Image 1 (cartoon, rainbow, N blue to C red):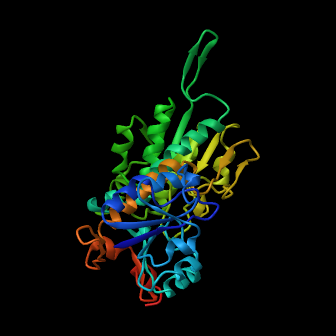
Image 2 (image 1 turned 90 degrees about the vertical axis):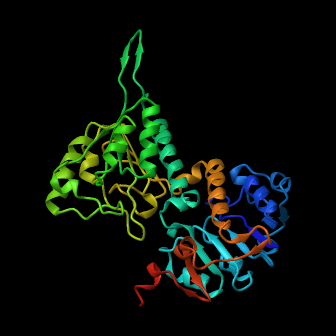
Image 3 (image 1 turned 30 degrees about the vertical axis):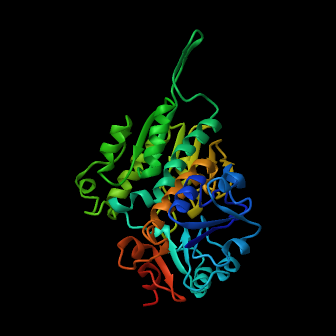
Length: 380
């Protein structure tokens, strides 16, 4: 029988890696599930909800992981927790592979098999396991809700006996999963929405949601995407033209949401200090890249500030974690789909097939060493 452990996350992480629904499915697959007491409380899941689906509740993290074959987590577990696992045990979560290197190497040294879900290949087969997409979708939604709450006026156009209230103008910078959900949410709230991205294929997606696409659409832009769907590096001349277009556009915006993140690198600057200084007093910027430094030059990660000209800049960290009930539910299903690749439901045993491309793609450490190409190439 496979024993799966879940421990409480750090205080700044309200999400949890398992839900009552996924407990039920794991127990049906002949797994034993042990959860540290109180692990789900920040996501509005009490211990009784887990017990009702067949989980065991452990008094401490040490009790939960003792003898476990698999540890599920949201953030990196402590070394103490991982060290309590038997060598070769499986750890699955968002392990921040480009984060603090010494901590990652210490985790690897425990000889656990570490699987970082951020490295999941972006294929059709992997969609149900895609933690980045499930969490970004919620972040995109919440960013617009927060912006509307902080904005000192209503978002939709309103016709009243005293006159018409104009609709707010919202500009979404970056049209990935978070950006698309931000567009859809802003539209539902009644804003006039525009969006920009360096990939030409996103224009149709933006327009399909009823928003207007903003970009310098010249010959270079038409060729700005690789066969794999990624953005190509643009020329300095194109960047200058695009920056001028965006700079003129942001002056009239009430709400801006920035979403550009590049794995393993600081977030690119999309909004300069000079651009912010041209915006209207009372405008709101939500920077979804704050954890990587921010897309806005003035963003202070973890804080909400007001610029000298009265623009509010929200730099919250862990945006998906601000809606932990849904974030935990979706994340738990992502991990369950991934675990299904490893668990033999007929035998009730763990079978980690290293030939599987999804398992290969997420494995970052085994036998005491880091093994993922993205983490070893610098020392190869």
